[in-house]
Image (cartoon, rainbow, N blue to C red; front, top):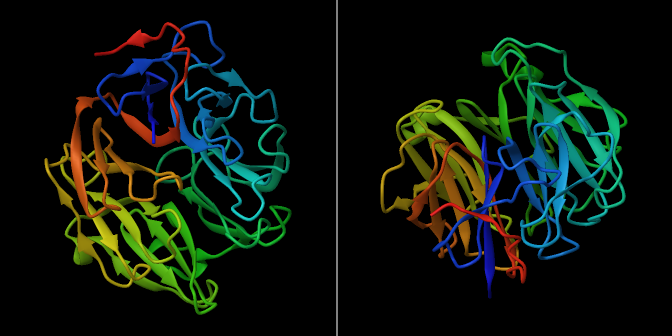
Length: 344
C-alpha cells in the first residue's frame, strides 16, 4: 500500500513524504494555508482515504490530494486557532473541533462531514492559571454514540456532553490534587467485548481510568509509574479496544521521553523500544485504520519515529523537523506534486 506521511509543524505548516520518508516537501505558496503557518492538528477524512483536515492558527483547512493543495473551509471556525479535531466512528458526518490560544477556547460541531460548523455552549474563560489562555487539547466521541462527546482543556478540566454539545457536565471536580482545575492533555473511550467501557483521561502528571461511565476514577501518577513526570498524549491502535500507547517526557519541552504500551486498556504498561533516544517530550502520534500496525510518533523538537509492529518497537526517521504538533498518514500518493518546496 502506498502512503503519504504528513507532519504538522509550528512554523512550516505541513510537510509530507510520498516515498516512505525518503524525500520531504513543504507546501507551495499561494494557497489558503500559509506555507509557514502554525498547524495544530490533523484528521484523516473517513469519507476520502486521500484527504485530510488541518486545524491551523486561523481556521480549518482541507486537502483532498494527500496534502499537496489546501483550501480554507469558510465557516464558523474562521479566525479561531483549531487545536483538536475528532470524528464519530458510528456517524462520520458528525465532527467536533476544539479551539484555544491565541483565540477563545470553545467546542464547535459539524453534522455534514466538516463543511459547516456551529459553536456549542462549551466556552472557556479568556484566561486561566497555567498557560495564560486555555486550549482544548482533547476531544473524543464515543464510538457507538455520536452525541456522547468529551472535551479536555489545558487548563480548564474534563467535560462531557450527552446531547452533541448542547449541555455539558464537568467531570473532574473530585480530582482534589488539582482543586477542580485539571490540566487535561488527552482522552480515550474504549468499549470492551463484555459490554463495559473504559474511559481514560490523561492530565499533565497522571492517568485517570474509569470503568463505571466516569463516576469514579483510579489514578496512576506518571512519575511514580513510568519514571517521567510529564504525560502528554495517547494513541489507540486502530481497530483495538485494548491496545493503547502513551507518550511522556521529563517536561515541556524536556530533554528525554518514552513511549509506554498497554495490551489491557491501561491496566498495565510496558516501555516500548526506541532505537534512538528522544530529544524532548513525546508530543504526537499518528495512525490510520488502513494499516493498524503502521504508527507514527514524534517528539516536540522534531524527532519522527515509526513503528511497523503496532507500537512495540520504534525507529527514528533520518529527517528532523522544527517543532512537531501532530502526525497523520493517508493512503495513496498524488499525481501532481504541485511544484513543492523540496526540503532535503
